[in-house]
Structures are given as structure tokens and as C-alpha cells.
Image (cartoon, rainbow, N blue to C red; front, top):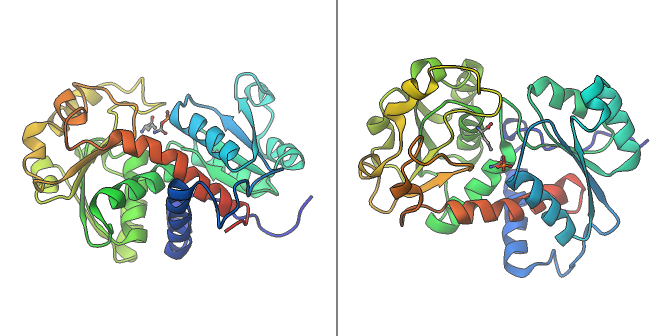
Length: 307
Ligand code: CP
Ligand code: NVA
């Protein structure tokens, strides 16, 4: 076993802004040149294990392709086809995988499982989404915003929809990258109070309201996400609660004329966003999805001590 605390990528609120910025700079450089300081395969000989307790398209394929582009290898483990599905503990899984691989990415339900994995792993652990947050997506989102609109610092981002894991990671990002975040959501779907309290303590410019127009007015970017996140399938009434928060052409017209639209995907046209917006000229969702591939590489290189 290795000694010392591994460089986990667990959440944006527990990482310094300077480290996040250096991951993004690396991602951008790799996107442009395909190389890290002239090196084409900086992760040759390294292996990433990915544990999935929920479905994934983007996270799975972008991490796999990102790792391969850097010269590394990938092993995929799914809950149902592994001993996790038969009750082997997360702690034991962490100790065993640490003897085989150099880094572990996990997509899971409760945040406590992510933290348990990080506690017992002797290799870096990456949060590939939990019920509470989705930090890898935010790295791609900040990168996408900046490619289209320049530095995000001081800009106004508006969220209209469920105060879910993505909304929480947007709050973390607003503090770490110093932008304004206006969130409109139904009162019963407000992001967790402890996250809002944290943002306040950190001096973040985060506003929460129930009026999409108030949130979106003058925004440089409008963001939303599915009304039914993985694990929320059996909670009724979400569609009624969220109907008024749909991002449509009228809501987009309240934002800056050159505002962009972002969505982590998968999308549900006619629910959280209309087809006219997500398939329209202000949408940058395909660049956003592509940037997952580049952002993952910055995260991997940072976790593995290569930047
Ligand atoms: N945005 C995102 O994480 O997509 P997947 O669920 O397909 O990984
Ligand atoms: N909020 C969504 C994001 C999917 C990438 C979910 O958790 O299902």
C-alpha cells in the first residue's frame, strides 16, 4: 500500500480555486495540442477503475477515452455484476481496488459512499456524480462558458429548475470561480441549506428565488437539468412543481441577447427545456458534452500528480 493522502477529486468546495484553475488550464492546453508539455502519453502504465451504481453515457465514455488519450487504461465495474451488488462493503472494495489500480472514479447514490471510498482507498478517488453533487460536469461547464464568453469571473449565470446535484455543484463553482449565480426553483426543491449557508460564509454571490424571470434577467448563461434525476423516479408531482421553470424562448429572451444555454444532458425536450432552445442558436450543449472529455483529462492528471 502507498502512504500519504491521495489527491482526491471529491467536490469543488473542498478544493482550492487555484488547483481547479490549473486543472482547467491543463484541459484547455490538451484540447488545443493533444499533449501535456510536449508529452503525448503522460499516464502510460496507469489504470483507472470506474465504479457505476447508476447509468452513464458521457461520464463513462469521456473518462475511458480521456484515460486512453493520456496513454492509460480503464477497468469498469458495475454494481450489479460486482460483489458490491451482493453486499461487499465500500470500504473493502476501496482497499482491494487500491491494490490493483492507480485511481478510482465512482458514480453512486449517497455521498457517504463516496466519502467511505475515499477514506479507505490509498489511491485518488474521483466523484463521478452522487445524489448530492456532480463536480466533473462543472469543470466542463466552466470550460465551455469561458470558451464562448471569456472569463466567468463576475458573470451572471442563471439556473431554472430542480435544486438538484447539478445545482449544488453550480453553487460550489460560483464561490470557487467567483461568478454570480441566480437560482430559480420550487420552494420544496431548493438546494440543501448547508450548501447555501456555506456559499454565504464564503462570500458567494448566490441568490435563490421561485421566479425564473427574476433569476434569468440579464444572465450571460441559462442552465437547467432534468426534472427527474437518477433515484428521484418514484417521487411524484415533480412535473407539476417544475412546469413553470421550463427554459423556453420567452425565458431566454429575458437573459442577455448573447446568453448561452447549457445543460449537462441527458435532456428531455418539452420538459425542462424546449426543443427550440436546446437545438437553437444559443445552445452550446454539444461543446459542453465534448468538454467532458477534455475536463476529465485535467482532473486525472491532477489526481495522479502529473500537473
Ligand atoms: N452529464 C452526465 O454526467 O451524463 P451521463 O449521465 O451520461 O454520464
Ligand atoms: N441531475 C442528473 C444529472 C445526470 C447527469 C441526475 O442526477 O440524474
